[in-house]
Every structure is written in structure tokens, then in C-alpha cells.
Image 1 (cartoon, helix red, strand yellow):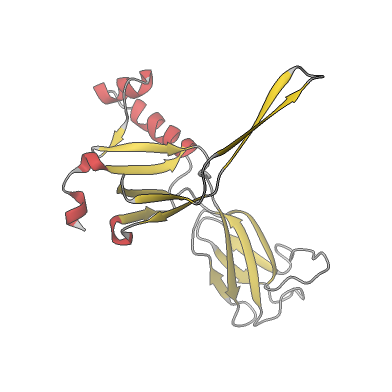
Image 2: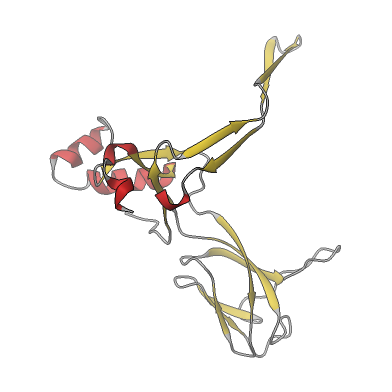
Length: 199
């Protein structure tokens, strides 16, 4: 909504470090002052006047799990995200014994760019109306929000414990805490997905 965009300096694009690097490479390829600045690593690289924040633990291609139901032999289902990689199809409910994933081209086919999975009529691994568990890596994602919209909660103080390894002659520190994150105003967050993986 417009009310959250009044001051762009308070907004942040939140992305993985790899996606941030791709943005810097794209800006650096431009024959402009901003391109030179990005190439030399001077200052912040903004997108549309909004600073970029890289989150090292945010995955470049996040792991997604979906349960999709076929409607017949040769029917198709579509994943929520596109640009899928490392796709695995198993039964919807795993049993106690290890299960072999369904076989690509024998039990199903997939168009990675669009995320369309087609039931292979000749395969016997998937019933014509089965619900399957689909696990895959999706295209990169990005968040846009006010920098104060993310709330951190601590349920206890930070605990630091020290130990000494006399044989290696080193001090060891264990730092632990309980923390959770939430969003205060959900209407003030935009999620971008199905982004490209190259410049």
C-alpha cells in the first residue's frame, strides 16, 4: 500500500547474499556512475532508491515441499514456484520404511522452467488420482518491507559457556539463546519470487 512507501529510506529489500551479488553484477555492467560504484564496492547498492540487505543464511534457491494431486492418467499439476531444480516425487505420506522416489520419465515428466509435472500413463509408481509429495529447490525469492516491521523475541538471556581444551591449548565458547522472528504488519510486506538465477 502507498502509505508504506512514503519514505523509501525506511524500506529494505531483503535477499540472499548470492542474489545480492547478482544484483551488484548487473548494476556493475552498466556504463554509468552507479555501475562504477557497484564495481568498486563503494557505498550501498540500492534498487529503486531502497537499500539492499543481504541475509547470509537466507537460501539462494529455497527448498519447497508441496502436496499435489493428479486427476487422471496424463493429467498435470503445477508447482507453486517456477525454475524448479532437484525435484523429487514420493508418496504423500511416508511410511516407516525407506521409500524409493518415483522415477522421472517412467512415472512422471517435468518442465523445470514452468514447474508443470505430468502423470506418465505407462508408469505404475503413481496412481492416476494419487496425491504426491513434491520436493524441489525453487527460484530465488526477495522480501520488501519497512526495516522496523520485523520483530525479534528473546525468551531468555543469551547464555555463554566457556571450556578449556588443554590438549589443543584453546578456549571454547558455546553461545546459546532462544529467539523467534515475526512480522508486525503483514500488509506491509511484499514477497517477490520466481526471480532469475543469472545476470
